Length: 213
Image 1 (cartoon, one colour):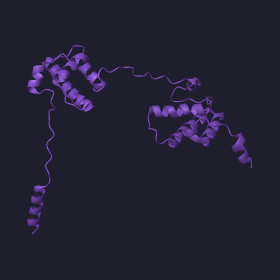
Image 2 (spheres, rainbow, N blue to C red):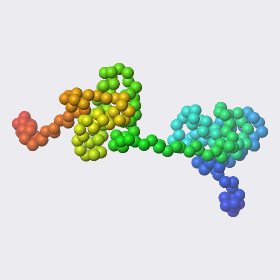
Image 3 (spheres, one colour):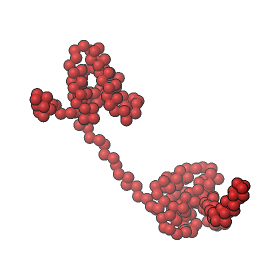
Image 4 (cartoon, helix red, strand yellow):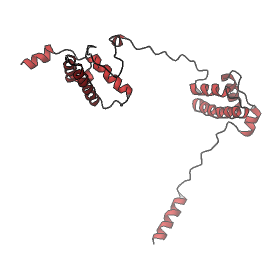
């Protein structure tokens, strides 16, 4: 009956629920130990026990520091023991997380996406003329592919050349006649047509039968 009464009314609120009530009781016990060395030894042992309770977390300095921080938090910051890491302060719990800023970057052409704009910017920084030209051709192929997926239609090379110029603020340019003449914005490979398995399959199966016979 006394245990039930403790469960309903006498138990303190769990500070960190993921560790459970037994860990919290052990922390309270260690906090009251008078001998410094004994308190330190028990604290290190308890941190190892807390590590076993959280097997999903990866080992490492960050993980170990989190465990020690949690130990001090469970003790209501009243545990006096030397920690391998800086002791946290109560202000840590009250501190609100920093607000993440929204990406307000407006894409000029949504069908190309942010990554294309970044690639265009990188291409403008290339000094070697041939490397820059190769980068423009690579961009042209990508942009033509993305344009086709978005708009479901074949786009003329002149549109892609214009868009490359706009996205680079005029820093990137390529001769349109050369692009069209040499199909520079075409993919470097074409999907091979699949062979039908009709006649060939029958011939192979007949050969197998003959060889088996």
